[in-house]
Length: 260
Figure: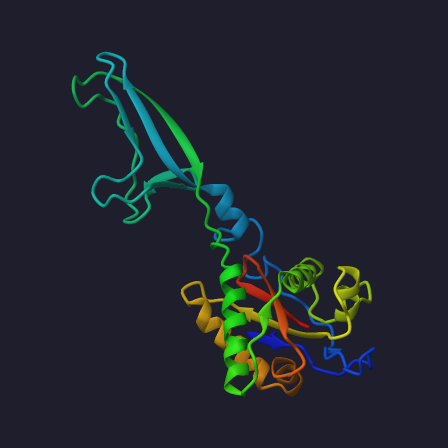
């Protein structure tokens, strides 16, 4: 599967007011599994890193003088102390570390306890920032073509996010779900007017260091290069849009854009 995929646009049937719903009837595709990039149980896989990587806080009390000490950073570089495969080390320089067993004040024996806190390596959820950036970029293209900006609809956004999540959870990439429902069906099921209906899809791999605005420009560029998606974005009769972005740990970003 390529780094970016877009739905294959097509036309729906006529509706009540003579406008045609515009949403593709594309081929079903396969959404990459979150574990495609690392087998379960191998070092470096998402599951393995969550189970075996933790931040340590050492709590020690001298049995002679009662002095207490807490240590959770490597003194030389101030990086967190972490444990990998049962070994404690500095999270920055990698030097091996172990709790002190003698008191720095009196030399007595130190009773040491360790508190381990799981280290969350999952990327921060930037889905809302991506949604807003795509909304802004879409409106920029409309304004460049002399069209009015689209209002952001929380109702359409909820419908869009539901479809993005459904594609991820059921491993497909299509406007038609496993239940046979297409965009107009989803509008109806979730209580939205179906007299106007448009839907764009994209599968993008997010760069964790890239600004949402850069990713949004890439996505909208792809839509504008596709006649059916471009028609949705530049349709004069549309006045609202909603965007649902579902981020997977693998970096896959499933995007649904709904219009009304």
